[in-house]
Image (cartoon, rainbow, N blue to C red):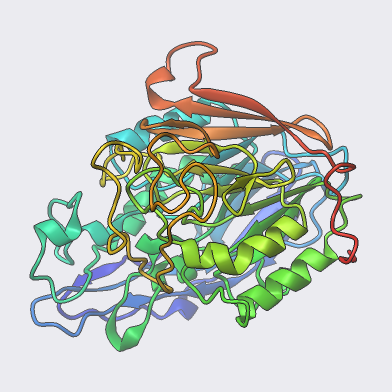
Length: 452
């Protein structure tokens, strides 16, 4: 409501001019309940001559409490006083936390953008009928464009070397939202930010579009930032970490993580799944060891509390690791999975760091946030080297194809993970990778010094 504006001079809308209402009920066409929310706008401003500014349409957020679990609700949203209501939509609530209750099917996807490959990914994902979506960052790739729009770049710095700042074409956010609406208006999508959401602008502001458009249960999970939070979905506790906000052991995020992990009751939520954008374990040349500092700060606490699975994106390819801790195979380490292959404009990553001549130099892959902790391996077959000379033993499966994953919890100890390649969209019962992930709570119990 209220159209976005773009140009040299823009005037923000007054969000108070439109109400934020959701009318809902358990029967189609019968909306027996109503909830009001808040409306907001944001601007993306650039203090450079010739760059266009942007101010958003009015964005609405409505929080609905008291919903019954495992129940289908029908709803409309808008402003009833203006006769401006949406068509009827519907969604289904999650089961309550319990060791024998899970979302039916969880789609995991990252680095989507808005290309023909994105369309194939989402079409394929919809065919797999998920009940929840985990989006591991890099949503729109609006920052692959100049403020005036035009053709986007697969390599921004190559195509626009004279740009005074990393520009963005904010209408890509609007277009991406419209593209995703048929799916995420009925299936909940839980998000975490990636580097393409940073979007620096005037006065040093960052993440304005991402933070204004997407609500997450940060306060409900004790976090003071929307850049990291946690939530339950049936018998799974999800921890969403921010790779582009301070993650050091002295940080607010680390303190929050520690308290959150302490409160997890594995008798109620047996599965512990974490997600953040930038992978710690990665054998591709692209982003190789880029977030080694974050791994060194946070890996031990996740291992101590026996996180089962970790999802990341960032690398535009697929890779699944064997259970690993500190670069050593460990039956109690998490299964790390990279799904940054959603289909974005930057194309697929194909080179492996262990391919001849493809090992990056320690000066490559500098993170957009945090320090540089590149290191040679201190043990194992690659001891003393920066790269392996073959696929690392902790890398179980890797492939340079666009796609998405589906996670299905069978019970409190077994989950089926399937990676679906885009090229298999019309092939029945065809997939790129599939494995049962098995928890061993008796063998890998939480450290005795930890109380939860």
